[in-house]
Length: 309
Image (cartoon, rainbow, N blue to C red):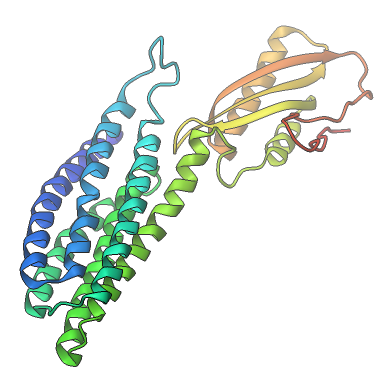
């Protein structure tokens, strides 16, 4: 019940973020055009990029709730990861466009109406700050983390716009406006890069972040009566779950005792590594002292062996 309540809260927050973002984008485009502020227009594009991000996040939340079926046997856990990856690519492309517009504005400066910049910047800060605080406790989910980072970057750019408008008013130097645009573009790239790396690793079925094969294999070897582990494969199913398959060598014993060992391994993997989907193939040996040292053999340099003597 607590999980369903949390999901409803997240869905409500994403819907609210969609409405606030639509209003904010329209206000920034109009105000930026009237005040000749590239910083406001750039921030409008920045916020506009949040619309597909939020829509994808909303769809991903819906898909992630769907149970596995005959075609999607692991469910739709990667829907949110795919949404985060696409969102970050969109952000990077927009950042490059903002840099180009900033360069053009340096070559052809225009007078800025700082009063409009300040008031619209304050309104945008309230809007983006509300969304950021609402999603602050959902950063474990990669999809929602992408949305959180977007809005955190928006909030920081709003602060920069307000400060820049005061500087332009006091100094009369209008080149500050395109410099703010460059700053916003930099924050966009910074926020997008980490999500691209993390979501790309999951889509490529890489080892979960902060985990090593050697560490997982060593933990399995600590389970009583396990003699050797090899062909270990660990991959991310989504931003919150991982799967594992491996071969475990034990002494010859009845099948009922084998299941006890398997349950001990599954419980340990879930508690220590958060691995909830496991496939364990047992191999039996009659020679307690005969150990082979090998691990998964992917393309590339030979992996070190892991065994317990």
